[in-house]
Image (tube, rainbow, N blue to C red; front, side, top):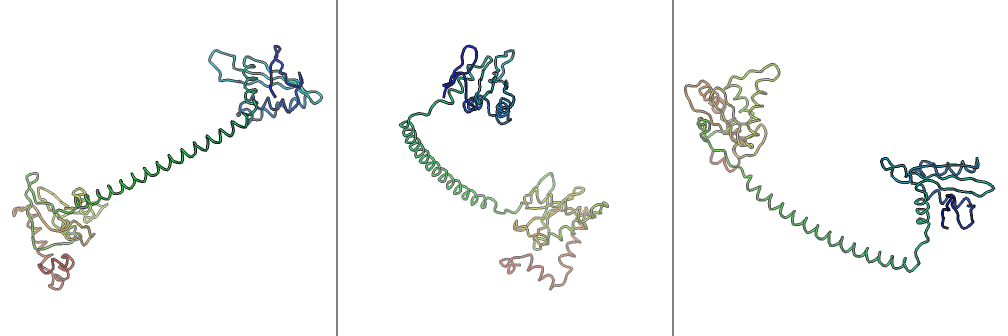
Length: 300
């Protein structure tokens, strides 16, 4: 079924000037855009023509161009005694009829469908081979990345091996190790910092919380190697023995600014002397067992 437009604008088909409802429905359905069909204007046009005997539909056939009004198409139809008389008017009427004829063009011969299927099979096989090769390349790259990542982790594990922080001259302060043969716990380091520097709470945080916050920030900045507390030119530093964080029972070495004229230094010596030596020998043995591992207990 093909449509052609006469000079007066009337649409003719194989039945002459009259169109049956199927032909009119096919034409209106093909000539309208999907958005208009979904909005119900196609069904409303046919229903109005059947009920009243006459219906008109106008819409923009192509995208509107600025200052140009040749984008509209108008369909005017009459219905009587089961047949339609349909007119297509407007600047884009020829394009509308051409679109419908193009969409209603008969299908290609059977030999074309066979060739198309054969081509589709070859194209599908070609794509499957390409996808298989692509998956193999991606799998190979994934294995290489995993191996490279494993090597990097091994090297980084060696690089991250703990190295005790040296006592060095920094900002004109010389730190000296104290009580070289003794160790303390992290919780004792916090309590000792409060006692040595005479820290007081501020109403919001206790003295222990203030000292723990500053020591913890210093420990994070040093990469869990040491924590330092400094006031009035006196520095007290706690070095981790083996670089392994064990919470409150982490073993710590002590070093500080050595100056007998400073009250903080004298207070530090007296405080740790009481902590390390002012407890019974049984408690010292238990303490040594916690602070030294099995390889160091015999030497200690």
